[in-house]
Image 1 (cartoon, rainbow, N blue to C red):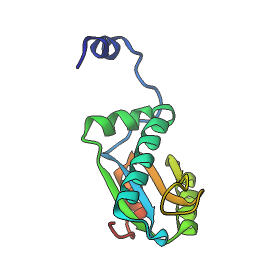
Image 2 (cartoon, helix red, strand yellow):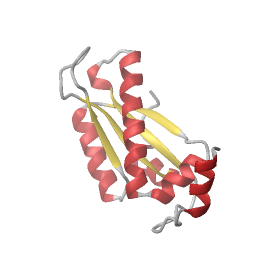
Image 3 (cartoon, rainbow, N blue to C red):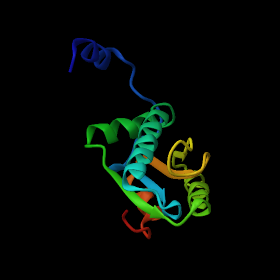
Image 4 (cartoon, rainbow, N blue to C red):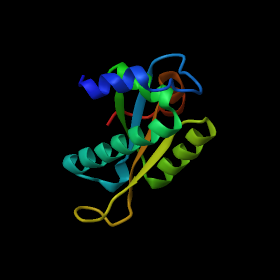
Length: 138
């Protein structure tokens, strides 16, 4: 840890809001209907993970802090198609889970604007398991 990071850590105000009660993780649900190649999937999941992490800093900083300090657990799961991802997003929002949708720019394998990934969290592992526990690992 650098000196500036150290100073920030000891002088920054504490996060307010809800504190997670257990371990936190992030879930990336990949639109399996697009038949993306492995590299394309990796890039899209990377976009989703970065975007979700940045979003969590503003929406759920306590969850983000716990997730960052405990190894940043991430799971990639198969979604059926764009409609499936949107239905999961709706259920996640209703449960208070942060959601991030990734749409492709269309420069390589798939059409521009295609919904490729739904990133959920970081949030409570048990809450995410309730929502996505029936999905298969990618």
